[in-house]
Amino acid sequence: MDDKSEIVELALAWAEAIVANDAAAIGSYIADEWVIVGPDGATSKTDFLASVASGDLTHDMMRAASEPRVEIYGATAIYTARVVNSGHFRGQAFTANEWTTDVFVRRGAKWQCVLSHATPAVKQDTSDFE
Image (cartoon, rainbow, N blue to C red):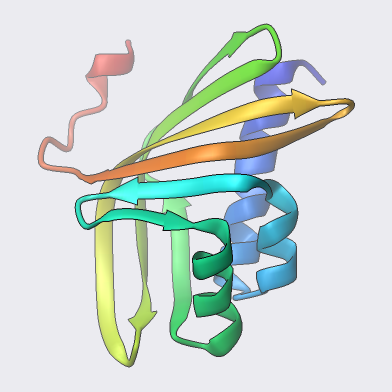
């Protein structure tokens, strides 16, 4: 399997772990220094996984709503896609339609995400990737 295909498969498996609300499995895809950045700021791996483990953050659905764009730069991969997801945060239901970018670094034989960024999707067209 080539690196681009491996990143796409990794992103799918990571999304499955998120929907399973499995903090340990989610943690295996992200590096210790990982943060997710969104409109409300940055959240560390420790804080994100604690929210999942406590049940404060749960997901019912997460899937790519566009074909992903994957670029490889040596031992770094950039994955971008429009992603839709739903769940609950501290008892409040949410749905999200976001453009996400994940930065992966190859460490030995394993890819790990070191940074995720999500921004609300306004434009639904994915032709920017064509």
